[in-house]
Amino acid sequence: MRTRERAIEPLIDLSEIAELELLILKRMREFTSGEHRSQFRGSGFDFAGLRDWQPGDRVSAIDWPQSTLTNFSPVVVREFDQPSTARVIALADASLSTRCGIDGVPIAALIARAIATIGLSAVFFQDQFGLITFDEGFRHLSAVRPRTGKGQVVHCLEAYHQPQDAEELRTGDSLCTTLAGFIRRTSLIAVISDFLFDDAGEVLNELSLLQTDHDVIIVLIDSAFAFDLPSLSAGWIAAFDVETGRSQVMSRAQLGRLPARVRRWQDDVERMAKAIDFDVVRLEIDQDQSNLALAEFVAERRLRRV
Figure (tube, rainbow, N blue to C red):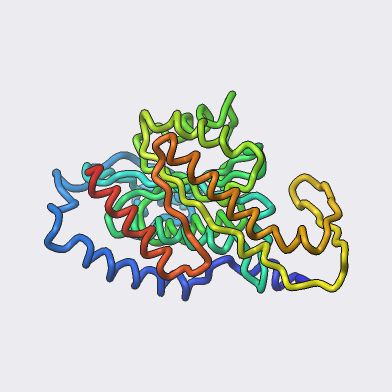
């Protein structure tokens, strides 16, 4: 039974973020030292304009003289661009099914850790990082516009935990047009999901249309662990779908076969993704090795692009 306090616990806390940051910084320094040219070039930071303060902005970015003219309502910040930086966008699955899991570990916790890994890797290269969340059927999409810094990563994680805190996107005729309307500058887009939805092939085809302007990778969350339920004495079990509201009665044997069915489904998704030239990173519940592999993959992709 979930208590009110349990329901509002973060998917990843600050201590985990700090531990992950140290792990990534250590590995990225080893990964880049002596093997690649400098990542930072050009004339430095260029002033891009002024805008209202948003959560995740650094205090050092506040334009205090300009803010006094508005009586600090709103606070005004300076925005800069650096020629060498890129944009990294995490397109993360926030559907209700990702909030389910086992032994206190929801699928969403793995997605949140992948968001943190990609975001902190972007921080290492001083790249801008943003977030787009989607629900079941891609009916509602919310976004956090790309910014730089660790504070932005924390803000994106909070927005993933509570999607209503993010900016709602206007939906177009298709998923491709909706995303393209928001991501107008060439970006690395990491699609993070377990892809346990009926039209996974159609979604992959839609995402492939973005590859003409963007670099899209698939981060496949291995969620079979969430279906590995304890043995039950009951012969028949009523299962309830939190997204569609449908229920189904299944036998104890059918329930026991669910993890294997999920793995087969995700194997098929991985094959479909690779068939249309997506690179796929598969993350398992053993997070340390998985997230190091993801960080290295993002860094290598970033280095190759630069």
